[in-house]
Length: 592
Image: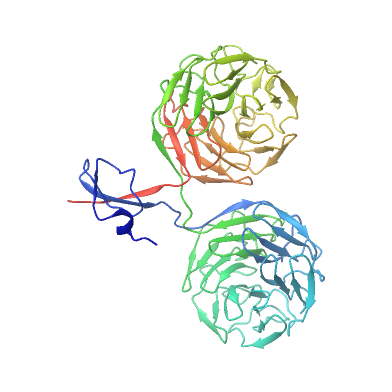
């Protein structure tokens, strides 16, 4: 790897303000503020959990193996006890062939293609080996037990603790063929967790022995007591290795969401799980882990862990639009966008084109209006539909990069609707019309609108992003009882309710596609700067807009780069901000 000197040299750049060309760690002199500065990547200081798709079979007492994005869940109590095995691919769980012996409260080790299942309800000593397709019974544990812990690989694993009954301290080492009794834990206990790379290095923590905080370290020969958990608990989830582990949820009592990180010496509290539970399964590392199942109905909840050091995105203020306005339409990308229509004190037909740096006024729409639906792929391809010109309208216009052309109307006139797609393939949904709040969805094929299957919930002022065959509709106003965080996913035929946004709001800006998008700003009330990132399964809050506003426009094809423009803050706004999924922290070395 090249050194700083080889990459940057030894000269200090003199620049008026923050130096845009600076590389990580490079020192420059800010001649405006008369300070030396440097920058480094902005990353998260602690890990966090995010909701994933549910198991197909909800259960507690489930065991796990593998990584976050390639995990195996097996066994558990549905009820009754099950041998169900499922594979997680980072998005969804898929059912695979069952264990030969259905059981709960078992332990597991290994990967999603080479795993080991041992012990469990009965209690049993049964051990089974997974080859990626099937389970095969192999040699039993020496001591049959339930609510035990285990870790390691398919050929080098450790089993420890549990209830025989009574609670036991027995430890056994697996060499790929047989289990061998080795030195016991210092404290006999069941319902504990473990973390370890193989049979020579392991961590045991929590469990049924008071005060349920005990942690012990295995060196291949003996267990040594080390620093305790901060929160004692039983039926705890655990994953990682002996020097870097996670303790997840459990029963304190009551059930807890607490997550703790082990650094080889101490436990530190981290961000909590979303759902408190005990008797769950887990897999992965301290950088990327998975928690699944547990005692809370429907016992199928899955959460993904991303450790500290993940990039933090940020909004940066760029050149404003020429005309301040709200309730506008928009489309395109963060470097090639179009903003059109809106309310600047009256209904507007003004159109502005964004080429990555500045807005340029171009030809107006034929019909001035606000509360429009709009979409497009760039500053040369856009569609505007519906809105309010005094009365509601169904008018549709297509943009070709130079002019707007009137084309065939929506079937249902309405305002405050939303949509996504291009000027040849788009979807319009929701809104407020003469008949009230609308559920209707219409598909545009470049010539005509056709009514297709409705939204599940009628609403107006929602946000949306995607293409005509795959998209997301989020938030909005239901009428009484008011705003919603509800999210629906479109598959080209039907809308399906999926996970809600974290913040209830309407009239937001959006960017992205069905599996990767952003929702920013909006009206909660009050007006918000909140930004949320959608990963195809769930929403996570991220860095706020610099200017809180509602009824703004948005453009972009993913959650990595986006554009926010206009809105009400509360007066009409021309502010434009660009989103980047990565950002830097600038530090100042004072010369005083």
